[in-house]
Image (cartoon, rainbow, N blue to C red; front, side, top):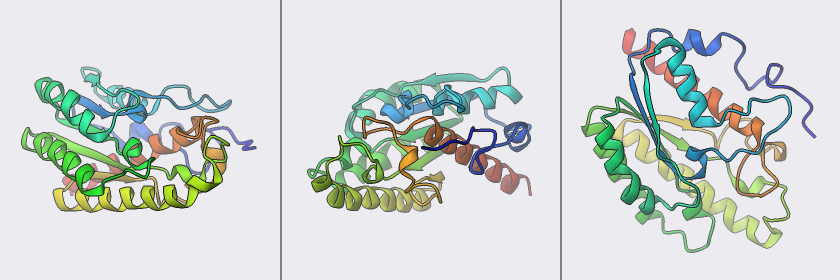
Length: 229
């Protein structure tokens, strides 16, 4: 069992890091689209923040921009086509200048995964948000095949590992082509650590969530350095 706290975890941020990385950021309207990762269903873990991933990013953005407006449209269980159908319109109506789109895990979990169809839905959302003037964050998800949960049976793991890897690679390719701010959790040094995952086999725990938050803030901070140089 993982015994570190977030303040000791080498993959997480230290006190003051997010304020430094996000200092004087330009974003004032932050929208989140997606599934349970966006909604926030990480399993609490002692020693780690209970504030969920997207809400935590919003909180840190608001720490240096108190007038930040934030909407989280994420909802558990949705596939990518359902995210686009139900959330893209409201997100565009919100007029975001920063948007996080995180989905695809529910598509890739079963063997019925259709990569081209998922790519097309993601592309439609990202393209529309970019055209509306938003910077867009995309995410390469943790590979759920490494979850130690008995709810991910052994017979499922090889195929699931391949599908989740394919989803991540294709999301990264779409991100590179369209110019999103991409957070690659799939290749994170801790990504195969079974201590990142929740007992349900479908989500991460507080440590996995804290690392996702830290990587997102680092990507945003690196972007700010680039645009200012």
